[in-house]
Image (cartoon, rainbow, N blue to C red; front, side):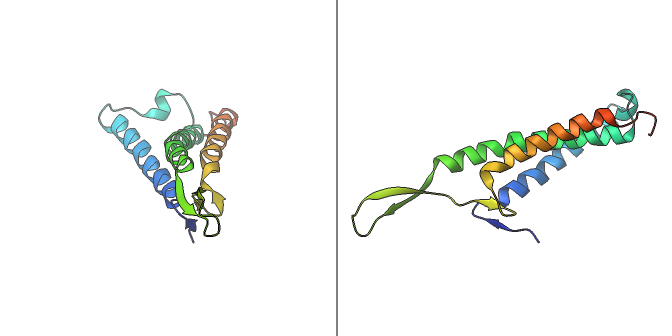
Length: 126
């Protein structure tokens, strides 16, 4: 089950759109330019998928950040009924019980881990 509050759903939607765009880019490179990308890069399929994962996660981090930045700069204006004073209430956005402001960092850390892991996968295994 997917759980979100506020605009947290957009974290999932952006990640799914990014995996779609990275996949389409690979299909275009393979079909139009007749490139076997794992052979061109002289990598195993495991290394290729690790780099694919790293690319997807990095793109997700980069595209999620502007949304997080926008939501952190805006809020809901509320008035204290006792004093009549107005103040800004920040948005409460989360995805899978993790506040939305942490998702770009999570994506970035996972991208770095996947990229580093791609160096430890054997080129002879594919």
